[in-house]
Length: 326
Image 1 (cartoon, helix red, strand yellow):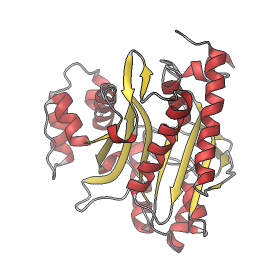
Image 2 (cartoon, rainbow, N blue to C red):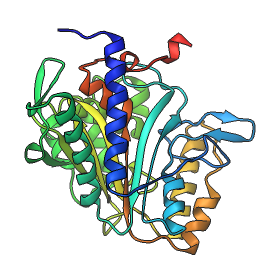
Image 3 (cartoon, rainbow, N blue to C red):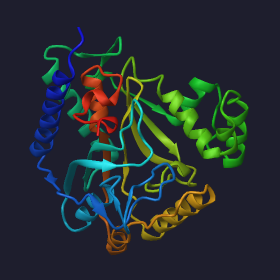
């Protein structure tokens, strides 16, 4: 039986309450962070809204790490973020994000936080039921059903292509182009767009029989994750449920010089693609230079979590006022 938008919004309110209940029980500090910031992420896949000489914040990752560098050990934010040029069934330019970090903590501990929050929502909204009904599927979300998959395994399963451990970027893109014959020319001409498009298509097909912890990502796909030896791969986990990217996390990158290099490399890529370079967060870099304790963090899309738990195929159904109703 379909539920009304009003009923979905009431469920959304309860989901947000459950999230806060979990982090309060874990003795996290909820940081009240600004929406207007002087520096932003240069990640090529994220376009920040410019407001005069500042930006609407696309993420609170750097604020959380600055709080931890300043002496807090467990910090979370549950607030609005903004990203330009994103409005479709899965994106709204203004969206709600949960982000948190722990120090000291492993990425596995952060994953357990996410699993605990999601199972708490399941237990509250569907008491006595271990499976989440979503878009015609019954997804078991209890802890014992979650499974792990690497980026390499995902691409092999979907495209029959084995990505070597010590791949070269040029050879990787050449091989991917040979398997992407139906892609638009714009993707064929831009290696990063091609890889992102193929990744998005593959992700939409997993997470229906159980939630997936997608691990071990190519290093060039992120500018803030710690690299594995050889810098081909990063320690990074993305949570996929019902074909939706729900959360993304990684251990803190703590080296000032490496982070500054990643920021500058990302800005160079933006310029090469015809995108404006951005002013990255120099206060965050200063915190790194002074010393950031070991730890890990994650970001979870609250709107998409609400889509899952209200069986919604469009993000607008779980928002009071989506972009096209303003």
